[in-house]
Length: 494
Image 1 (cartoon, rainbow, N blue to C red):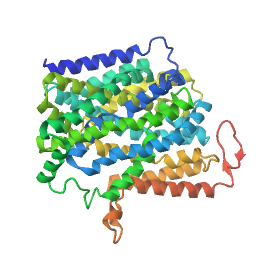
Image 2: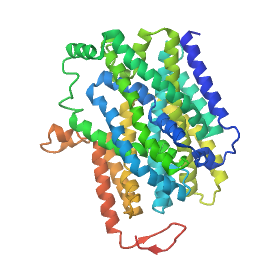
Image 3: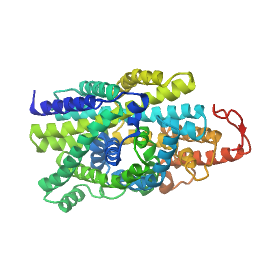
Image 4: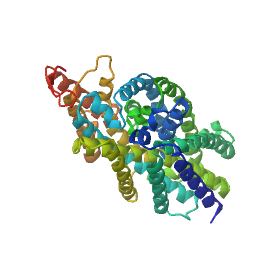
């Protein structure tokens, strides 16, 4: 066993120990298991949400895109700033609603806001599809990190299986408490590692940041400018807008709001989160430093940029430390995805769709049985290969953002819309997104479309169609709406 592998194994064992130990002294009801009994303070909510938001996508994807794409990668840094501003106003309102209606899963919010269990089922299906792509990111990233950092001793498939098993074990036992406990260590470590690498590598290889960019420009003229086709400034701006609107609609991020003890804890979290963006900036510097030091990486292999330059620069034991931290960046969000997906399937798809008489205890038991099955399915797909981290993340974000119009309309002082508008809007947006992803439909097909128009992110186009459909259908059905919620069961004015 080489030194790097020993360190990585120690990190994984430590994470499993911390995750299992987090259960101590707690009776795991569904509410305690899924949302921590709604008892997390500001710091723990911050660490949990940061742990979910900054994952293998940040660790490998940000540096990989800086390496392969250049300036378009900066959208990853920009959208968070807008998202946190929106979150300052939206999330406290979401917390109040979730607390009042005892929401446990992501879809509970929509089901209670629109008094429609059927809408909760539809939202659950969208959420599970989106989270499947996101879990693939975490597992694939974990496989890459362990294989590369162990110098090929451990194949990616073995690492993926080990990571998936560890997640399933500690989440089944400790629920959200397991992820929150690991996030404390993970967030401190990734911050230290990111700052160190982002400063040391440019200084070590180039003598400074300015010299690094000068040499990149000399070797690849025009690389440091925004492209004039493809990932243009139009794509950049539309992607920032799309991703910022959908930032908090990642179910495993959204339900962290439920875990907060107070509304103030939620709002303070949005104030603190921008500080964590520095992690992404330093990861960009690592990617840029790797351009001239480990040339030749293309396609999905560009995600290897960080690990390749680290292996070239440091001793095996330190490579193991970086690999171990990378493992933690996969475990925290990956386990939260498993937790949320299994809760959605058990509570909102099974109970609300087929067995409304099922008790909370039954739902909790089913969620724990579904969890390993969902993990197994994700492992199957990740082993089949696929797109880069950013491409997967963009698809998942575009899909989940289709929930934004119905979400934000429910938070207004005088809520607008109804379940029919929500159904129609989500469906219309999903169809446009399916056409874009499945059949390569773009705005370039419009007669006389300029590069500015053609480069607009199709996810934003889908969201616009969604919003127009939501408003139109809601207005057309506003006069009278049949309320099928069990609390009302009567015709009501919407």
